[in-house]
Length: 381
Image (spheres, rainbow, N blue to C red):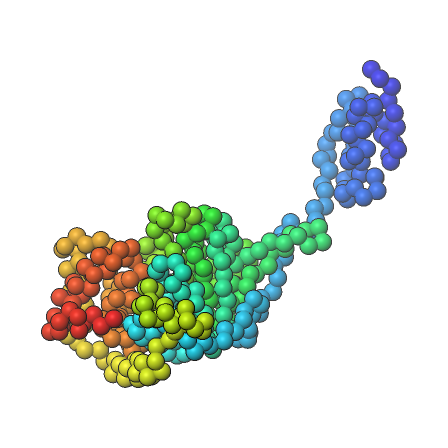
């Protein structure tokens, strides 16, 4: 057996092979972890014996949480969007947007899902909603979200420890009257990462979700408009099918290809195209008048007809089916000042993947409420 050699930091003597290992973890070595109970060595076996050392671990094992201010001012990452004179959307989309903004100004929380072909202004519409509302605006890219906590918590290394910080999205959700834009929530690294948004957009859950990493319950502040914009279809190979239960919590808007004269105006004038000011004013007046009429009492015949809508859809085995949530959303949108046709459309648009599905559901709605108007007049978009 080779001769034993003393440790240069303590009085222990070990064989050269064990001495090299011991000196790396020797409790008396400068810079080594602090040990409250010294290691006792059995010289015969050259292995440590009881008691086992109790090492004082760094306090950062329980990661401190950075404080979050819920003040109604602007939050980190927010910016104000300047209004643009030259914008264009279908009239029914503009009607829906104006109704949603009016509802948010009364403290209601509004969730909007914008779909449509890529490059037709989905993100631009989200920005202009913030401009019309004159509210702080946050764009949040979902492409790097791998876990539900990634939306609200970011872990950083600080002074040899890890600290959980609230994200800008967390702060935005606590800022009243903010506009939040979730870009492509169907393009997360894990499709289950978006599950944390389900309760946050659900009125029956109180627009609340628990952020366990921060030890707090996050409740969406009053007056917030949360917008999600997605590209969906087999052509977009980096996306996943978005949960239908989550989509049903959103008002559905689809940005369609603008008319040729609008595209021509966009090409000839770099500022783009817009509806005439008279059109904007007329739609504002229309929403205001309908809101005043529906705020006290919605036509009982319409309510009875809407109550039959889910049954008619189920009897014909239409996909997607609808439930009480969609009917309640129609009534809510009517109280915002939307027309019946637009309210029915935006209530089910988010859960329809094809235009044929949307048309079939709206035909059932028309049959249910028994409106004696032609289809062209009823579907006024």
